[in-house]
Image (cartoon, rainbow over all chains, first blue to last red; front, side, top):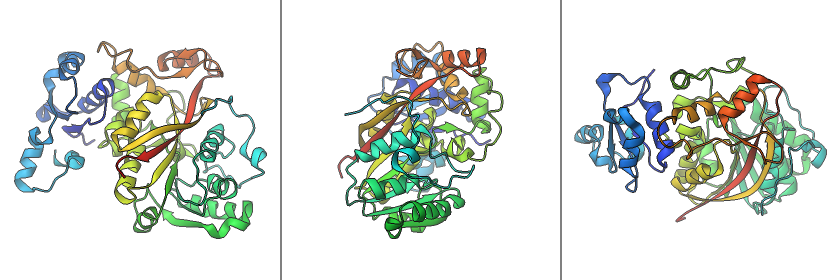
Length: 90
Length: 307
């Protein structure tokens, strides 16, 4: 069962974002944490973190794909990635 | 204008004089979902347009838009290669005068993922589709999520019916799409492909609204389409379709403070006056497996923004 440690939550409001994060965390080994989460720039991250409770520490929120570690490492190898393909770089 | 007209006990074949060949591996063309979809298609101003149906099924909708909506041409494909052959036969028998206007894309076509399908979608004005919104109960990642919420699978839900792919999709396979979280991953994959290969095309899609209409509208906007509800009808929850996915979504939000922001929309009555959450609906179903549960089915047109 392959589970990515980078997910795109663009366009999702807070409740489905929490659902997507919880779904992604299931089966993700500790060695792959934190889970990188791309959110919209208008995302209320404080509220999102509050809703995640104790699991918030396992999550890295970013509103710009260039802030995502997996993206940065992939960019070092290839420079033509789009936001639509971040799932592939984890 | 959107009408709610009850659960649709009159079959399409009775209404329109169309009686398609419908083997067990095809979605039942007499299902009220089909009637709702056709109500929306009637209101979609399809006259003279080229339409592509993704998931052609029996071909009942293709025959309908050729006969009743005045479309100029219909393309169609399906993941199950038997269905496009069936659709071709049905259109020839149901509407022989329009048979030449139907151009099947043969073979097993997932969404529009063949060269021929992409070529045809690029010539299309309106893409129509009614795709599954429930993950396959046997999907291992979905099962892990369900088990984490302590939600059991309904009895028999893991048995594969002949028309399985008309009801469920491989959930983990579409997890790159954000709205897969609420069961819209397959539909989102289609919208992305349409934006890429037919950026000016409209879409007319049929949805079960068990996750609520607001989030479906968010889904359209996030993918570059302005949504408009064309038709709506209350239908009985298909007894063979598992709702544990929706229960797991609600339970996953327990303790987050977001419990009221996402509540599934089932009903205990056909009129839609007695709303039920997915948890409440499942409790009723466990007490009485024959209990009637309802949900809204609606047809939404998406117009590309910025096209």
